[in-house]
Length: 386
Ligand code: FDA
Image (cartoon, rainbow, N blue to C red):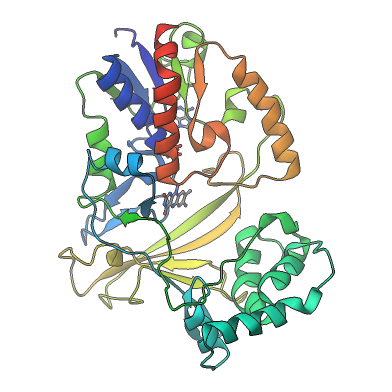
């Protein structure tokens, strides 16, 4: 096997973007390795073999961006549907629109408040803890939107996400809780949104579809039985590493903490429409899952079977070392640990750390692509010449 000009560890959107830029702009021969048996990282999706419904294997992925450059770039590989994301939540047996908006408020208080009246009501309720510095997430939530709305829609949902009573969570987890004083319940505020017309995997495969790009799946960078492993490659060829930064350095400064989710997927033969929408949150403590996703609603334009559907119940928990790391916990301790790893990464020969795992940050897809385009602009030529 010929030695590539650039090795990319991880075929997620960060790695794919760098690979595509290196091959197209620099004519570099690129090998991408991924320890999973498929391309695309967490954005990967697959069709359910029985119903044909597209399932987002690692949780619901909705594309949205206001970044013109990213939008132009992704449209080179796929078109997007006109799907507009909306979320609802079930609380105490009633369904409300999210994020909290005038519709939610009027339904919850059985009122017909105008925007100004609703603002005044929420301001008065949020004043309950006026003059106090919120010491925990619970107090912070009350001081932002008042106790009634906080306790109905935020408290138990957040408690389930963190498996922790919000009274024991730091106030810093939330800086604001958006409340809209209109009836607009579009989930994202971005200029562009939609879902890839032919699915995520077709998009992701198109990015890697270049004669200079080779993809090797089921190949772990730390597996010394495969030729392109860290011990063999380090310092010898340029590398873009998008796996977990703490793993790269053998956890020398300890583990960075993550939350993960478990998805319980069920195929229903009894109905063609379980909940009438793609995402239903469950705000109450008695329901153990945080939300139910019904993927058929991501593509109303497709000819899916009318008598069957698929649902995914989503459970949130802290990740162990062998779990998929999804959301950085980002505690004060984690941030200190990250600084120590960053110093090590800066000293690493011919290796760039990128993507959500390599930088320990939550990145939406457009952010991962945008960050990769910046790295391609500013660092790739030097890396390839190194
Ligand atoms: P990603 O994690 O995708 O890719 C990293 C790759 O590296 C993986 O394929 C992994 O297998 C591989 N790897 C790791 N270690 C390796 C090793 N040792 N050897 C070889 N390969 C290795 N974004 C958005 O815009 N809208 C949304 O709705 C959502 N929804 C969402 C839900 C959930 C549950 C999560 C966790 C995330 C989202 N996202 C999202 C974020 C989105 O998934 C994210 O932006 C991209 O995955 C980032 O791509 P990366 O390439 O950085 O990482």
